Length: 508
Image (tube, rainbow, N blue to C red; front, side):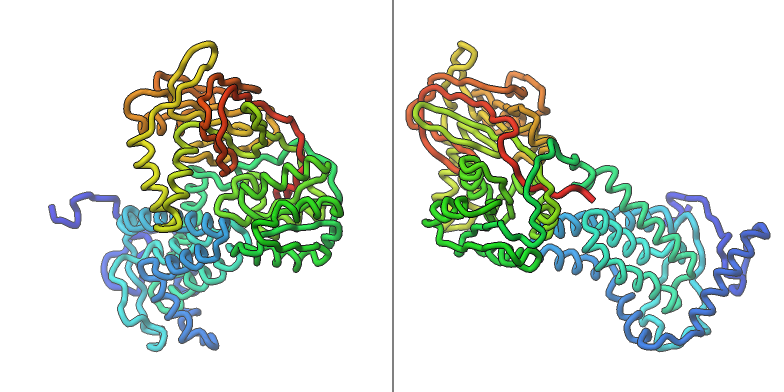
């Protein structure tokens, strides 16, 4: 047995070109007509002159070799800094990988169709390096369709940009004479199927996203009049807030220095129908407290390093927020509350004590020198190598904890950091505890990946409406929505149910 037949697959020659000498499979009359139609279309494309296509389509066909065109497209999407575009790029590449692997592993070995004869294809169209693999199905078409469909499933806007390019690549395979139309159609169908298979394994954010509840009454601002949006003038993302003016020209935009941020929010709240903030989770937390105090709805535009709250609302950019404001689409969300001695505060996302606040402190100390990610790695090493478990009292018993995490609402698919919340008004605190003991890193990982309801000697995960922790040592760091303060004494956690009205676009 030769090397080529080491893993034999059924050989099907039903697509053999009748113009090629050699054995031809006996096919049904209906299949023969399909093959004849396939050849007729191929010949028609070969003989037809398409203005401007001779230099463009062969170049596109070559650029898609080995997926180079799609990797470049994914890189371009990533550079937009849009979270949705980055997810679309990742999904497109995952779909491409599945489609390409399927074609090369099974498709071309199961159906061994000869490449077309290029007698009628003008020399200017023909590729310099002709493919030597079998013809059915078209791998280029499968990759193009998979990438475009994967992108479109995550972002219809970017999908509309990529789809014409993918279609042109598929057409180029017939135009240059290396594939029959049936090869291209079969490859494209396989690529679309691969993208939907990936979506079945990893749902898109729209699939995971609930319609939002409970709905809340909020002003309808078709041109933005009545919205006062406050943004840090020193932030690179201030351009995003300015872009909102294109969709909502009546918006009042206030750009200020960081030290004046709170004062400008207070001033804005006195004259606004809707208080707006562009920033990360820390800035949004500050704006939420002021909006609650003045009884105003809040409009959130993500503009920081971490934007968990905005993304859980479904607001990923100015288009999402503009749509919600112009239609008056809003929901009432819970607000978490903590009290430790004389220190009180609110949190929209998470509250924690133990390792994480210490990690934030260490990271901030190093980040200005070596950058965010290296500082985070170095901080994790410092904390896990030197810090001792936190001694507290819970349920009348003394306990040693590496971490106590409380989420404002139940987090699904946790991981190394909280990922997603489907319901921002469930009335629950998602509490996860990593008990003290040996190997803190493993215990923290176990707590991170634990389900919403689980218990073990290393960690516990429960959902409660309130929590009390006694005997926090004075000066214990507390982290909430990315901010760190120090306090000690009795810790109480609870929630203000459906206390804050926030604009949230309805799903399409």
